Length: 268
Image 1 (cartoon, rainbow, N blue to C red):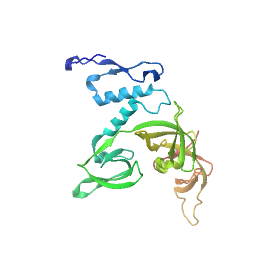
Image 2 (spheres, rainbow, N blue to C red):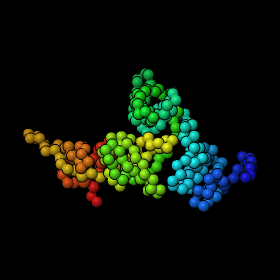
Image 3 (spheres, helix red, strand yellow):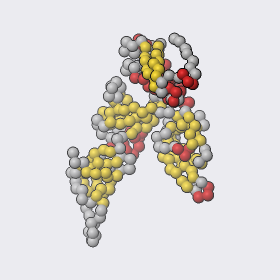
Image 4 (cartoon, rainbow, N blue to C red):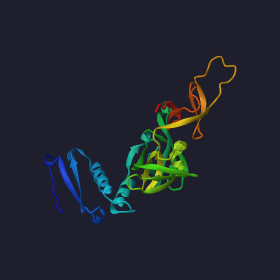
């Protein structure tokens, strides 16, 4: 309702900002959203706007599919920011030639006198097509912003996972392949993270460590003079991994879902 201009020496360290929104009646009876900003002089305008948007979105009641804030957040996501291609990591989302891609794999390579490069596998978020590209250290790409949200797995059926948002009870269906190879560890009531872009689920992530039960282990080969340090084990989810030779069927173990490696016994 009012505007004020501050000089560099008079910028406040604390400010209360009021937002009167066109759909204020939907905000649980609150006509005005308030948020306090501290250290404004040292915070970027972008960080400030994201904080405002985050708090405002939390006040919107469940069941509203779109809002002015949703549209604004989508616009911010699509604007993106230029980054050095060498900084790309799996899970990042980039814009290229008018298309939106998710980084599936990113491998750094050293080319001797030619310098370093990064080989990336991209997946088009609209049609699922894959694209392999190599970027040099001086090349830049436009990285777009994604939003991560926590869900709980209700169950899986065929190639689909059914998830629920624990606070709003919003239910979503996502293809299992967005979990990647880790989808074999997905179980009912497991907490997962969805990576959302423009309202769409691009990727999903399981906890780094999960507990599995050994169904059976590989018998040692005859004729060996010493017992091997590791052996193959079949887990209750149907996957096979290498485990220490002292483990037996029926034991519970902790697995790293990122590389299928044995972490430790589960002594709970």
